[in-house]
Image (cartoon, rainbow, N blue to C red; front, side, top):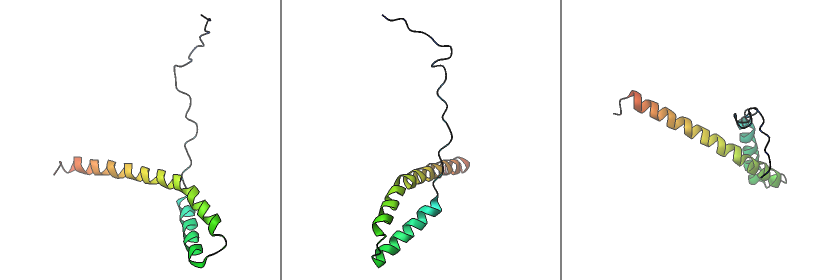
Length: 86
């Protein structure tokens, strides 16, 4: 069996998480979706580009919806607790 060198503190703490993830620019996402909807109505040449841009926004929208749902549940639980379960 090979000798293993133990480094002080190795494995004791998790790696730093790094900077927090950037928040989605919901205004820009909304503007892209409106531009996409208008391009659909007018059969504009930019339609495929806007469709791809809107598709790229799906993960950010999903994460934002998940975040809001967690907040809604937290608020509902607090309201239930304060109202005494009535």
